[in-house]
Image 1 (tube, one colour):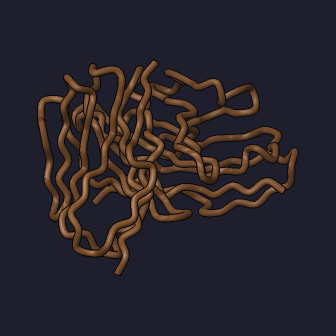
Image 2 (cartoon, each protein chain N blue to C red; image 1 turned 135 degrees about the vertical axis):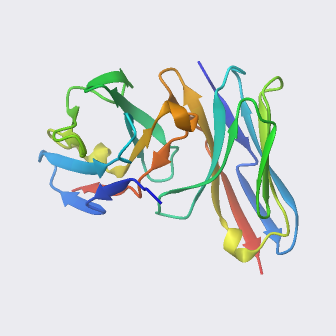
Length: 114
Length: 111
């Protein structure tokens, strides 16, 4: 069964460093998303991506964040200069209309900023 | 703005009980609704998806219903087991199909 994969599973970084979180969505899906979950809090939407551009972003998704689909299979989230408050679990998801917009989630990347 | 509330926030029950988790939302114009399970520190496991044209879905001991007119979905767990202990989240697409998540219900089933 197709699944969304994410790497790495856990990333530890120093404050101010750049990190890139990677996702491989399900191959025939066209819509891609990033969410984050700070420990003990609800899952929050960050950004949606379709046709090689951002279709919607939340207030959280400021200039420190960017997304890219560099090669037709990977979907990345970059945080340019990490802050302590960026520590969270980051989930990638993908969907497509014929599936009734059901979103399929990856296992997540736990980001720890020291 | 869509608001999603899950009640109760936490629940502790003895093994074998049947239980109901609730998810309420303010905007009835939803396309579908999905229930997830999340174990501590882990990812999201999809349990059930209910399309807007459906009223309920069943998978094993789980049954989810959707009443758009009242802005409510319920997840029914039959004959609960200790392995059911987890946080249960409801979510649905809003806007450009981004998902809005509820705050979750933390379930503990005691052996």
